[in-house]
Amino acid sequence: MCIRDSSYIMSSLRNAVKRITHKERSQPRARAHLGFLEKKQDYKKRADNYHKKEDQIKAMQRKASMKNPDEFYFGMHNSQLKDGYSHQKTQEATQRELADRIGPEAVRIMKDQDLTYVRLQKQKDIRKAQRLKESLHLIDGDRETSKKAKHTIYVATKDEADNFDAAEHFDTAPELVDRSFNRPRKSKLRALALKQLGIVADDGDAAVEADPLEKPTVEDLKWQAKMARKVAKKAARARSNAYGEMEARTKRAATMEVAEAHLETEKLVSGKGRKRKIQAAEDGKPAQYKWRRKRKR
Image 1 (cartoon, helix red, strand yellow):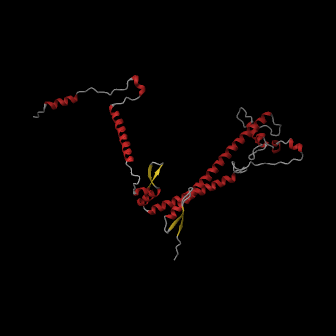
Image 2: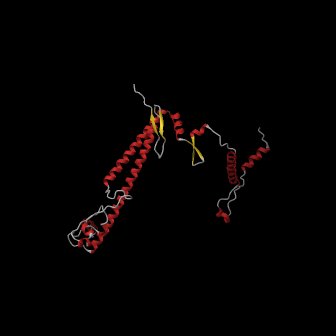
Image 3: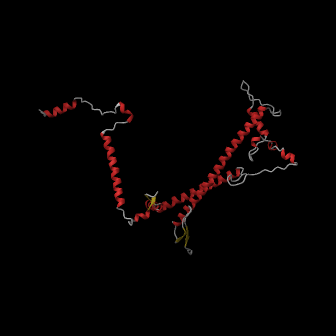
């Protein structure tokens, strides 16, 4: 027969009885605009975080006040200041760590691949910029430095010069006279206008165009002017985009050329042979070295 302690039985019964669920106090409705009601555990986390930061600031102030300006560590050779206050490892130190971890042969292969990629991208940009330059009408050359091109027309008498009409001479719309490129004639503009003025039947038949030999009406002239402005605007946008792409390609090719020079110099410096630096790196260009001549056997 098993006899249990009465205290044990009472504790078991106490756990079996449903207890009151104590809920945390919520934010009152009148203070709901202030947000979440902070509990003690939230305050404890916030206070611990505040005091931790305060202790860190005090420790840094104490360390700065006791710093020796003549203090030296060998790690200073492998670090540099960034933005004047934070230290970081130099690129040479990072590369040495990488060579120690994966081996010098793997590092050499990676650098050769980088050099090949840079050369490939540079050649692609140069070829693309050259094709854009050949396809564009470089009439005004550099738009910022060159002078505007002129078109001189000779006439027989002074009266013809005084009454000269450039639109009639070039057989184009007056809106396109000032353009030195992509200046369509009236016949082309009229063809575009007639295409827009085509009459479509109710039964869905094809558009019926007017006779192009008849005298243009006022409506035709309006359409010619509208199409001239549309063609000029579209051509100017395409030309501007092409010039922008050509300039971007040329600039990136120059950047790739500088990167190629740095990688090539780094590859040569890491090779064999005694050398000395004859010119330090400046203006983004790599340093220049001179190798001792070695007699080949």
